Image (tube, rainbow, N blue to C red; front, side, top):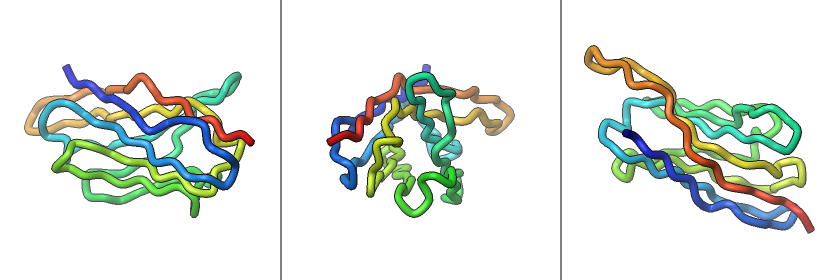
Length: 121
């Protein structure tokens, strides 16, 4: 069973930076689209950024120009570099592996447990 483990969250002042990491167990990491979601208190979980198997990226408008998603397939890890953080970025950040077919087998979605990011002075 795949495991996704996030790390790198914490408390940071407005304008600061954090880098989140999500380490995945198992093989064939490179075939998956990997995603970062976040959920603030009282709000729905939202997709923040995604990176496909070929390295294409997409971001929600509110983080464009501030956040960067990247992946290291050799380390089975996806990253989220967050710069110019704002109080409204405060949330639990989750890593998600998107389900995909590969060589006749469907590999389902998988989620990490999340890491808290708090932006406050």
